[in-house]
Length: 267
Length: 158
Image 1 (spheres, rainbow over the protein chains, first blue to last red):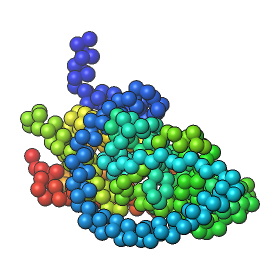
Image 2: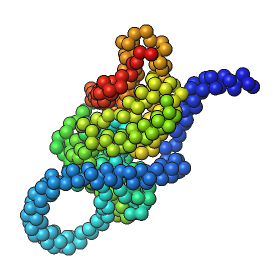
Image 3: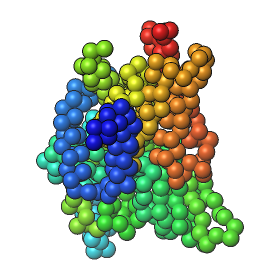
Image 4: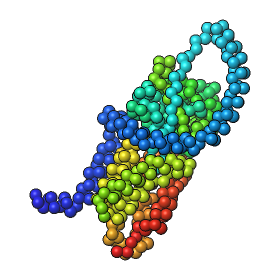
């Protein structure tokens, strides 16, 4: 027994290495959606979000001038658009009434700030400053004005982790506009995505829009994702691959919107 | 060395990683200060301390924001620290060149594993992008190691 103990003390670094490696493998291959792990992770991000907040404040102050100038320019442009759209809205309402068109429910968007992009060398997740207290739940879609960028992976009390579209395990069912064909989108690299399982006879052109299909329980239909940049028609395959460019730069996100739960009812 | 010193330095490194990694991000590529800390801890203090810090900091890194492959960071940091720990007091190395070539190879291997495991599904479809991502991340981190080498060289004649 004493020999065993002295061996353990002498070779403690090897034993520690084996134990740490085993725990890492268990974590890696365990169910990522395990309740206990998720609960612990949500507590940790809540604690660390307090550290991030001053950093986020400095970051926002740094970009404030440039952002203000950009916003002023946008306000002028949008106010011009609003005046022309008011006329169009009025006309649209009149036509809808005529066609007894049932308007779809509006999305409930919750604005939030990105407080952290993880500390690992490559970005595939975000931490945002809203959580369960604001009504955020796991799997709520996350958007920017340029389109869908991810979904809530883990909701803490006052902060949440967002799985980005750039994460390797992220999938989303999409539809091409105007053809209406559907497929499964996943990240490819360098702000490009790949849409698989698209019917070979689907008529898709470069520049076509890509939106959510509405087939999943997570995303409402017709949320913008990006545009088609290329089509790969493989010989001997029953489907084709479509390349899609994401409009938003996922590396430089500062503000995002969370689509709250009641949108699922509108599906 | 004071036992509490590496803990304090580790905590500062973690804070630096949290605060600075986003500011120092170049087209999505960020330096890995945790790895730099582990290089020094493993080579200066040995395998046991290196593995202990590598695993702990890896767990914290993953807890702070990773969507897929939860557990990969502690695994890669642990393995890297274990291998680097073999350079402790330069026991097996007669030349400086051999010493530096070894830890540099370990760093390249660390980032290779991280990049290729995290993007395993697309890495072979778009190899140039991921190879450049791997190399840029490695060289960016090594740039900071290079600066530290001037201030506090890893190889010290005993």
